[in-house]
Image (tube, rainbow, N blue to C red; front, side):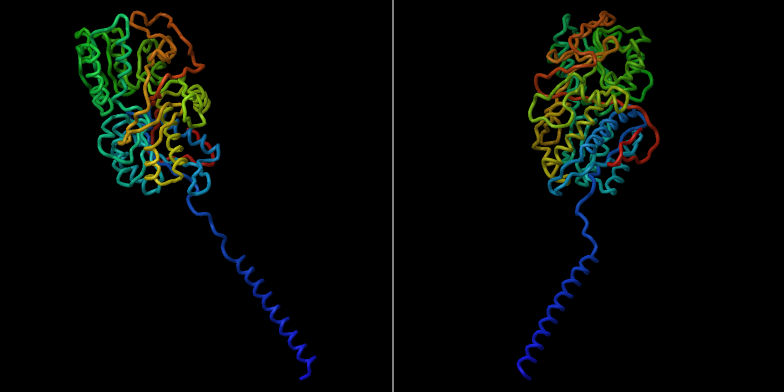
Length: 470
């Protein structure tokens, strides 16, 4: 074989090798295109589960709380979701909730169902009894449970590691009322206590009794009642005979209205009435009319309060008035403190997720233990048990159809109407008539919620893609 022949054969071999390599590369590219595209890892939404009493005893409170949480979810999703550092992206939130009918046994069943639906976090139902029913299930499944409407101190005395309170505990509710009374002129001397027998009200009573005595007041009447009762006239007749000047008590909405109607039917005239929860709701005025005038309520939040000057501050809502306007636009009704604390509960969860960078309940719970910040609702900080210690309370009073902040004086929008003989006079308004804000001198402010009733025990969901309507 001559040299030219060998050269031709060698050239053909090289060409063959190149052709083979090209075929291999092209085949590899083709095969790669046939492989299924990899899907992003991790969840596509942050799923939050809860029940709310949309029917039954706590229905009024349940609906207002639910509206507050739903408004937060809508605002979060409209802003692009919550950034989750561990996933490298922001996720929308999805709420899954049931109407628990104000039944503790239904709460227990529904929260077990929520666990099977693989929710990442839990929000407690409104009220202490229902929160106490949900807490053991959250604890057993290591799921964070945020309490916005369960204030009984007993919730945080059971050693739960996953229950976090956003609102001031029950033991703090009537303390500012006693402080206000101690500064009245003339100062009353004889107090009557008339509280419901539920865990929340009993916690309030157990703390206010020794505090009132320490301030020099006499407790001349001290009884409790079943919240489900429809008439309290027999007990209130005994109160009338006691010589009490001020009535302090209550439990929730319906019983609070009943107490006021019974006082009127008996012709009982007191210098002041201060009730839990009920007077905070705008329906208290629409239901009772002038009978609501002068009634006071310890409040977790009022629209005139402004915490934006405190640092660190968190949230898209920068003032109480802004939340008031936002809620009014969404639902056509004035928010009470229950609605505000429910929205703030969403903010607390949002900050815990952002700062921890995780969707793991244990990690977020540990993060919340270190947090110390302000929102439009006030100060958030918890103790080692998960009980709220940062938030503080104010006192509000109905005056000529307007709910005014009357204590402490540093944030008051009106002077207190006291005694009862002054209740029909025009109030002395300081600065607030539905507009404007007042800065609190220290700490935060909390409040409870009252909601409208809705029946049916069914699962309801707020999807992250479209705002929902009632």
